[in-house]
Structures are given as structure tokens and as C-alpha cells.
Length: 418
Image (cartoon, rainbow, N blue to C red; front, side, top):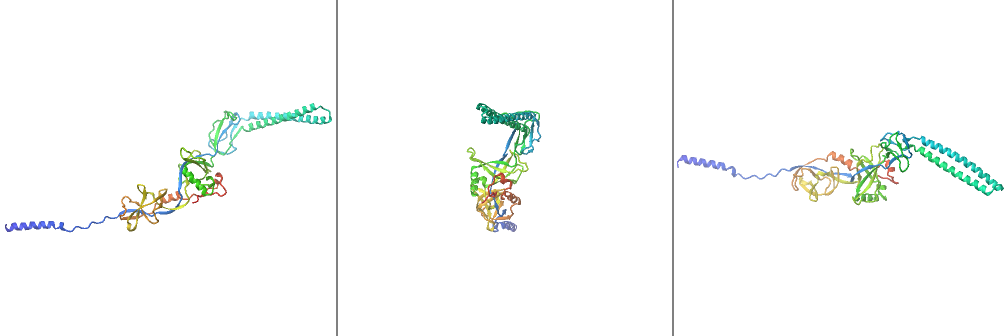
């Protein structure tokens, strides 16, 4: 091998050594993964009331079908269909002329019977004196006495007939028996109507509208709880306890209509396991109408303090509910908890959580128990707090007009004690 070949071999060997030098460096240690960013919130402590919520419907305490009490021709109907009428308002006018003529006839009959009674009375008094003097026989005295009794009875019958005619004439004015909203006319002006108890012609209907009843079917367990609340108030029944109720219509929010429970049915419906209860709702503006469906809530507890977190932060593992807590050194902990009632989007935690602990509310899928995270604290949204104030706040005092409607006892109170 000549020098040129040796030089080429050495040069090739040097290139191979240089190529292998980087692979001979020692391996660097693996870097730990960066902490997962999560969002945490601190639980809020708030005074709340737990609510029961049911669907119900409105009904009128009084519904009257206005019938004709005498037969005749409808002359007038001076009311507006669908309007509010008051007790005693004129609704229909039946032609009074036949009844006025009958009344005049009965007055004449009374005058005739009175004259006859006065004549027979005078004859009887005269016969009494003559009998004492021995001038008339006993038979003549008895005849005068009987004639006087017959005339007096005829006078009474004539006066009774006169009173009947006076009532018939009065009934030609068909007046509203109650205050409420009147329906449409079943019979218009110009038609003949029948009176009497068996064939009376219905003219219209009236329903009272202030207050209104709200009927609700509640489970028997709820009805038993209300009875226990009544016993806690030292009342013999639920009406005496004056448990508050709050209702809203389909187009309303925040349950603006306040009333009280005044009736609970005396038996449980065995087919449904429910009990019907009734709330009394004031309706001074008349906007409520019988038959409307409502959503009604009733306090299920007294006021109590509880910790609240967003309900979305609650996780489920089979039958266990747990929260992910960011503990010391920002390490995630899995904490079993007991849940309470739901207030809007906030959930009450009755056990397993302490004030000031950081609860993961966002990023839970990435957080693992025992792993370190990068927590970013955010307060609970103002919308949730505003909803909490309206949903979990305690009931206000029952309005004064409800005391009469619900037949309040000596010491009414709309607030449910703890």
C-alpha cells in the first residue's frame, strides 16, 4: 500500500469518527409536563330557603248562572259582555207591564178582602154584645164568628198573593247576585224567556275574580311535611299555619303573585298518591282569569345557611358525587360531598366542603387527582348571584288583604319558622 492509499484510509477513518461523536453524548433528563390550567371558584355562603314547585290552575271561588225567575220578553240588557259587574247591577229588564197589572189586581183584591173582614168583624162584635144581652141566639153568634174568621183568612191570602205579585214585578229586573266578571249574553233583547225553578232560561254567568283560588296536586309526602310545619306553628291545620305560596303565569318570572294556603283536601287520591291543596291569590287588578295554568312554589323549609357552588362543578362516579379541589401546592384532590337543593345554577353542598376551598369549575376533564395544576380564580357570576337573590330569598310578609281571604287566626304570620 502506497502513501496515497494510506492517506485516503486515514481520512475516511477520521470522517467516520467525526460522524459518530454526536451519538456518544450523554442523554438529557426528561422535562416534567407543564401544569394544566384550570378555573377555580370559592364557594359562597348564603341564607336560603328550599322550595317546592308545582303546576296548578286558577279557579273562581264563586260561579253563578243567572237565570230568569219570571217569564216574559227581554226589553233591555244594559251591561257590557266580559265587563266587571257589581252586586245589584241591572243585567236584564223583562217587560214589567203584565206583572204590574197583576200587582194592581192583587191590590184591589186585598182592599176587597179587607173591607169584608172589617164588616164581618163589626158584625161579630155586635153579636157578642147582643148575646150578652140575650137578644140573639147562640147559633147567630156562632155564624157571625165563623164569617169573621173566614174573612180574616181571605184577607191573609189576598195579602200573600199581593206579596207574590210584588216579588214577580221585582224579578223583572234581573240583577247581578255577586261582584265579578260577566260572560256573554245567552239570550239577547227581544226574546221570550221562561221563569221558574224547573224551566228557567239561563241568561249569562258571573265569576268572582278577587281573590282567586289556585288548586295544586302535591305528593302525599309533601302534604305530610306541610302538616308537620303546621304542628310546628302550633296550629291544628295548615290553613291556620298560613304557609305562604308564590305563583307566576306563563309570561311572568320570579313568582310575583303572593298568597297563602287555606285548604287541604280531606283524603289522598289513591290512584295518583296526591293530595289537593288550595292557595288564595289576590287579584285586585283583575288580570287573572279562572282556568289559567300557573307555576306555584311553596317554602319547603325555614331559612338556613349553606355553601353554594356552580352545579356544573359537581362530578359523578357511579352513585358518588364529588368535587375536584385544588389543595396545597396546587395539587388536585377528589372530595366526596353530599348535595343539597338546587337554587338556579347554584348547588347547595351540605357536607364535604369548607369555606375558602378552591373548587375547579372549568377544566375538570384535564385535571387528575394528585396532579399539579395552574389555577385561575374567578368569582361566581353576577347572573347566578342575582338569580339566587330572587330564588333563594325568604318570603316577604303576607299582604294585609290576604288575612281576610284566608280567614286568618289571632296571630297571622306568613314566614315559615326554622
